[in-house]
Picture 1 (cartoon, rainbow, N blue to C red):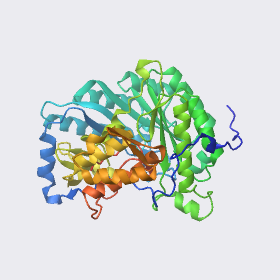
Picture 2 (cartoon, helix red, strand yellow):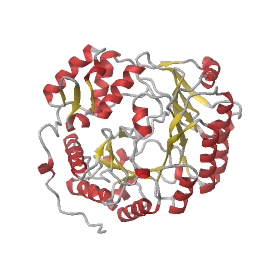
Picture 3 (cartoon, rainbow, N blue to C red):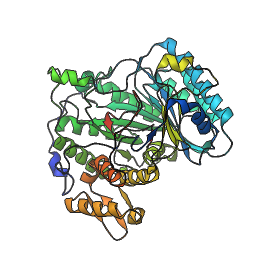
Length: 466
């Protein structure tokens, strides 16, 4: 495959009315995961932690595992915490398994886990042996459903085909690789160690040689990412045999390392919000025309004929709908028994916590409107939902009617459907609707909180729920 960038395509010919509405809002800003939560004073943490551990889980609960190591720091990511060294792997997995086993000893029977996500950081930095024994511990200690989706997120570095196959044999059934772009120059600028051709070859082999769901992430709105580079990224992704594809808008938070490079002129300028809107709309049209199914605003499924390669995107859709999530590992966040919590993010403190304690570093009571928030976010993430869902909230229906006039959605007698532009603006729509039922207050998040990948708007797991 050539690494040359093709001539700039005419993206506009793909687009239709209401695909691009760049001035619908001044900014694209999502609802904070801790919106409306009530802080719990540290003196109450031990009793509430025990209440969380001793409360039965619900059917179809989620589980999230955080692996807080990276081989290098990517300039677009705000979640780098610990430099990876092989000596870290075994002690960390030992402590993580101990956390699992302790929690299992406290948990009443009942309920089930139907999706598990290993995020980071870089889970695939762990050795094959450590990954496999961690997968075995998960299956031994958690009440997984027979068809539980078990995802390992990773990078090409440290994740050979043999290691991937070992993980699948140990129980994983879904692999998500953060590619971001197949443009080699852009990848180097972002801190990626492999060329675009290497990334494409790796994914092609992973898809053809493993019997699992393989998903890749692409980002739009990156510095210097023009029409040709974005079209090329999609061309390559469509050629690989992937089961699923994630499309995420880059959100340049002030604390990201990339800002220093932009200020010094070491990177080209960021594309405008209007360009992001157009690139998103183009990608949606391209994928739908290629026969892919849009499962959520950011996620697409390839109609693969092999049943065991069928993408469900179960974890991501459930976490955005406010589903309860058990959290394990340094920096992980979860929600259960009416409380949101974060596991100790300082690695040394996490490892030093006695094995008969949950290493909690933050606790908050979930918002009284949590169910409504989940309804709003789940519905708008799906992009099409029954009008009756919002019947208990007339004020929300009134707002939706105003957005229909802007072309962001259509309302029929029974159904509400977002336009492609509405899907692009969905994070803002969700935030606006949530504010209508819960007026803005000071947004509270745990110190150094890790809502994985929120530097990429609506990126996969939001492990701390509202």
